[in-house]
Image (cartoon, rainbow over all chains, first blue to last red; front, side):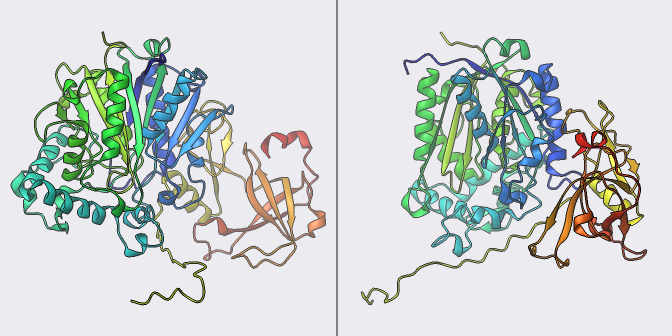
Length: 373
Length: 168
C-alpha cells in the first residue's frame, strides 16, 4: 500500500441492550434513541455529520423499502447524503470509511436496525441460498452451520467437548456485558447436556434470536479528535466474499476471512493477529470461532482475548452483530467497556460476516494511537 | 440413467415462499389505533417546533427532535390538500370506480393523511375543500385505519391555498 490513506477513527457507539423481542417499539422507534445517544457522545447535532449509512434487510422487515422508515429517525432533513445496504451495519461502516478516503466527507453515522422477532429468521435466511438447488431443501443457517461443523470436526478432530468449552467461555464473558441478551453463565458440562439443535450443534452452542439498534460514528483525522477524547483509529480494513454454492467451497476453512485479514493486517502494518489485545469475532457457533481463529492466525485457545463481550453466542441481532463487534472494540480501546474491559488494551481486531457459513468476511484492525511507529 | 435431453426446455422453476410476520405496532401506534375505536384521532407534538404529526411518531422527521409522549387529539375534520381520481381497480379494494384518493390535513396537523373522499362526485373534489370523517358505526370499529370509512364535504367555504400549502 503506497498511497497515503486518510486516518479515520470510530468516535462514538451506542446500542440498545439486545432483547428477544421489544414489544413496545417498532424498529425505527428503537433506532431513534440510539442515534441521539451516539451524537450526544460526540457532543454534536445531526447537522454536524456529513453522511449516513444504514444496514437492514427488507426481507426481515417484511416490507419493500423497509429501510426508509429509518430515515425519519436519523435526522435526514434537510436532505442528506445517504446509503442503505442490505447488510450488517459493519459493512456500512466500511462504505463510510471508503467515502472518507475520497475526501468528500469527514464524518458519518452508521446505523443497524431491524426486528428479527417480526419475521422468522430461519425462513428469511434460507432465501440467501440459490433458489434452484439449495433453498428448496429448507436449509437454514443452523443446518448449514451444522454441515460446516461436521466437516470441520472430521478434518480437525475437534470434539463436542471442545465446542462446549468455547461456548462456556462466551457465556461467562457475556454475563459481564449489560448489552448482551444471554447474561447467565453456563458451564461446559451444562452446555454439553443441552439437546441437539442440528447435530453436531447443540442448542447451547447457538446464538439466541434477538434484536437491537446500533449506531456508530466515524470521523476523519482533524474532526475525530474534537468529537471524542479517545478516538479509536482504523489502521486496516478489508472484505472478501466467497462463492454462494455451499458445495463449491471448503466449509471448514475461511479463505475469504484469511485474505481479508492478510490485507487488513498489511494495511495496518500489523505483523500478526497475536499482536493485538482484543479480538471480536462474529462467530455464530464455536466451530466458526475455530475456523476464524485459524484464518486470522490465532491459536485455537489462548492468545489475545477473544469476544470479551460474550460474542454472538450471547447476542446475535441480525444486521447489527458485526457493528457490535466494531462497537465493542471501540469500547475496549476507548475505556468504555466497564466490567468486561481488557486491561491496557491498545489494539483490536473486529470481524463481521454475512451469508451462510462465513460466506463474506470483513476484518478491521483498530488502535488507540493514530499512527504506529 | 437416461442421457436424453428433455424435449421441452425448462423455462422456469416455480417456488412458493411463505414468510409470516408478527409485527409490533409500537406503543405510540397502538395508542393511536385504540383511539380510533373511540372515534378519536391522535397526533404527536414536536417538542422543538410544536408541529403536530399524525399518526403519532416518536420523533419529528423534519426537526429530529423528540415528540411529546403526551399525544394530542385532533378534530376529525380538515382540508383536502391534494387528490387524484382513480379509474383503475386496485387489488384488494372493491370501491366503485372512479373514486377519489386524497391527502387530508386535519385541522391543527402539520402533515396530511391519506383518505377517500365520498358523498360527492369526483369532479367536485378540489384542493382546499373542507371535509370531515365518516366513521364505521359503533360496535363495528376495530382500532384500525379502516374505522374511518372516508371523508365527506362539510359544505364550509374552501380553505385558502396558503393555509395548507405547507401541509401537503
